Each structure stands twice: as structure tokens, then as C-alpha cells.
Image 1 (cartoon, rainbow, N blue to C red):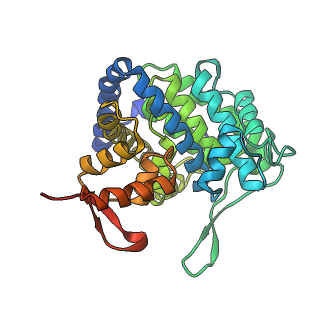
Image 2 (cartoon, rainbow, N blue to C red):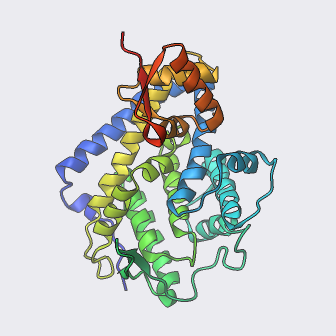
Image 3 (cartoon, rainbow, N blue to C red):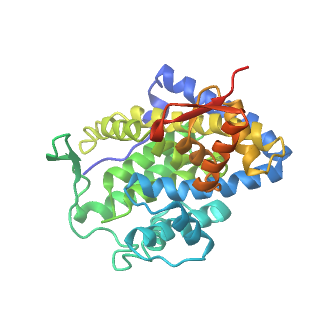
Length: 350
């Protein structure tokens, strides 16, 4: 059986690029913490946007999607779920609400992980919710020509209970060791959770929720204001590549955690970069949707598409974005580059 031991994080040298990323995340966390205290209403607005983006993005990574209008209705309670995907989305909403609002109350324990999983699947697959898998599962890879192959074989079902127990005990031991940096430890534990793959369904989504829980409990709350899951979704290919590299030789306890660690830290840096973009707009006290879109384009160093504007401001309906873009083109404020779906927009050059 796999051996869980995170002591390498203090006993072996850390790669230089990882150290640089670690330093960057820690500095940005300290610097932006003061901004949060200075603009409480601004960050309250950012939190609302981040929650919506997290729910949409983490489910989208797994191919669970519905329309923007349905998403908004589901989240505000004005519509009821009508299919599998929408039930899955509601489950994610319930768990992320708990973590965002009460993360101090939850431990990283078997009981709590199973409780989160039970809530995650409560709308769609209650018979599997909160229960470890009873049959072995595999992670498949599909080639460009459609051929399927086994990319990874997770922990067998009969060993799952012991593996989860050992992983959590190893985490607790490392968590209490002051010489181990938590920003290095958290992605290691998340990788191990994904490699055990303890449940028959929902492992990927739950891993991202557990990432938020562990980050928040250790003082890294950027995911409350900028969706951590959205940054993963926007760079999904990198995410899966890092996961593949770090899970190679995992079963014989000889894997390299650093590809996944580095991607995890890069994702946090991307969150901070996104935060800075939004602060520059929202801190100007612009609440009008047209003005927000206008300022976003004016402040962007690169042309932006409608899709990118939707990702920045999920609270603004696509029809509103389309209308505003037409109005801004008509009054000469912005220029359209390209046509149809590939069109992008930039500030008109004087």
C-alpha cells in the first residue's frame, strides 16, 4: 500500500522556481490583506461574484453545465433543478457556502470530508453520498482519435478506508510541524486525495472545495474574492498535465509532487492578478454595468472578447454585454477587432 509521508517538504531542498512562487504568493497575501480591510464593501461585491464563478467553473471542469440564466435562477432559488447537471450544481453551491462562511468550524478529517461529499451529491445521487467507493475505479485518458486508455489506477476500494486514514494522519503530523510550509503541504494532500479517488463520483469537485477549506484555514483567503476554480478551468490543460506528472509512480510512493505544487501556486498568483484588475474598476465606485464594461476594456492591456467579459463579470447578463458593446462602438468609445464569435474589443485609439 502507498506510504504517506510529507517530511520531504522539510528534509529535501525545494526547487528554486517553487521557492520563487512561494515567496510571491506569501507577499501578495500580506499586501492585499490590507486592501481587504480598507474596502470592505468592495470585497463583499467581489465575494458574490467569486461564489458564482466557482460554482460554474468547478462543475464545468467536469462537463457539468447549464445556461447562464438557469445558473442564476438556481442560485437565487427562483427555479428548481430539472436535470442531473443542475442537481450537481446545487450540491456544489451548498458546500461552498458552508466553507466560505464557516471554514473555521470544519476540520480536515474523514468524517468532515464524507459529510461534505454527502451534501455535494445529496440532490442527485444520495445512495452514493458520503460513502467510500465499493468497487475499483480508473482514470481514463481519451486520445485525439477517440481511443480510451487507463491513465491512472487509484487506490483499490478495499484499501480506501485505510488510505484515507493514513493520509489524514500524515497531514496532521505535517500540519503541526512549524518547519513545513502549509502552501507546499496543501497541494500535496490534494494530490493524494485525487490519487486515492475515494468516492465513486465527485472526487474532482470535492478536491477543489477541500483546497479552499485548507487555504482559508491557513490564512490564504484569496479564493473568497477571486474564484480559484475559475482560474483552474481557464487553464485546464495545464491543470491536468500537472496532475498527470505528479501522479506518475504514485502507487509505489515514488512520485514527484512539484509539478502539481507549482501549478497550485501559479493558480494562486493568477487569482491575485485577477484581483488587481477588478480592484482598479470596483474601487472607483463604479456600479453601473455599462460603466464597468467600459472601464474593463479601457484598462485592459489586451483586447477582450464577450466571453472574457462574461468571465470577469458573471453578474452581467450576456444580452446586456452585447447591447453595451454595440452602444460603445456606436459612440466611438471602443473598436471591434474581428468578426462573429472571435471578435474582441479594445479602447478606441486617439
